[in-house]
Length: 159
Image (tube, rainbow, N blue to C red; front, side, top):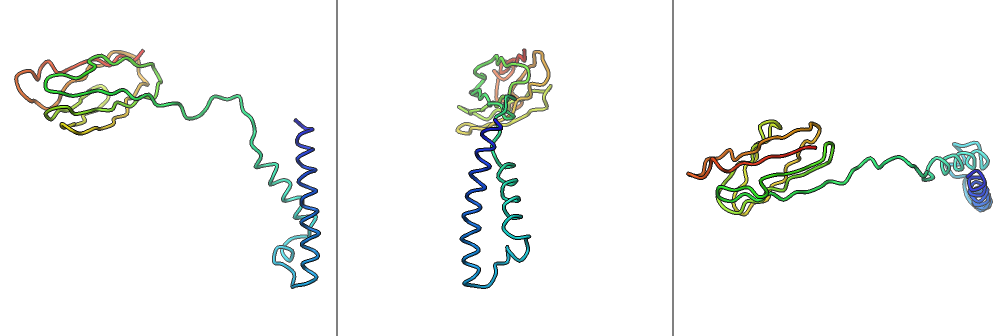
């Protein structure tokens, strides 16, 4: 790795030397540039540029990515039925529920997660599902829509 850094550094240094030579010849033809007036000259610019380039080089990392993939689960809401009625997720997984209203107006409620999201026919609503707590959690419809309303429920299982 140090051989590569030395090679990159010497290549950068050569490019800076070439630019400095061009800049110096241009300075003879015109007034000094503000960059030269505020710096210690080409050698200081060279050191600053080399350290800036070294700091901005990408570094390979073996660490896990910081942004995990989001899993989307589609849940449809129709009169008296959520599909699927059982949702299985992993503990700590990033999950979004995409609620799709097929008929009527319904409320997707998960009391343990403080979720109560209405969805009407023709609408699609996205809800983030917390998965930081393992267990089995009930969901139900929070908007009464008739005699089959009591059966409109299901479970979220966080393993």
